[in-house]
Length: 114
Length: 114
Image (cartoon, rainbow over the protein chains, first blue to last red):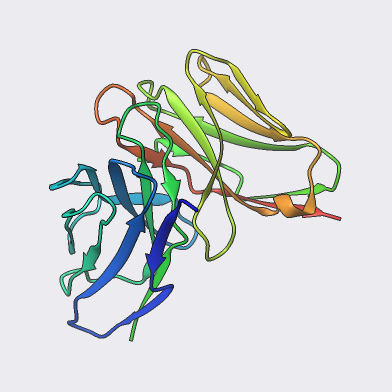
């Protein structure tokens, strides 16, 4: 049963703490993405990766970091430098990053600051 | 500067009637458009897409229309069902430069009344 999994569903962060959100896909997709959604807003791109061991910044990369050591995994770290981390985080993947490829999304992780 | 605009934050429709969700864009380089459906606390689900070489694409109860000269697209749902109640996001892609980038509107919340 192919798909994208994100864990945990809810995550709490203390001030000054780094937290890592997990994203795994078994769709054999080359490209993976991280988006952030705030209430009443559309999705904004944080980072994307077109292939293993490569990733690029999106529109709002400040305060975030990623790695892509395996094709199926694209974890996102929210660092203490991200001053407003409370949001709903969505991971997506596509077969590749071509102009006609559809991005498919995971169920999301809600991050809350204590 | 919002490049994809969904000017109606919400829409209510009677069950069995047609739902029409609208989307306008400003970037003339956008050439591929997608609609996603999202339930609260879940990831968006891909619904339907359209390339700029077409003006209509149909999939079951869902039809997307594209008017390139007006930079406008719409999603028609016929007949509307209570399970269609969700937030609908319009997204656009520039297939030329940066084909990875999906630009999202802020969404329209559809409520289908039984």
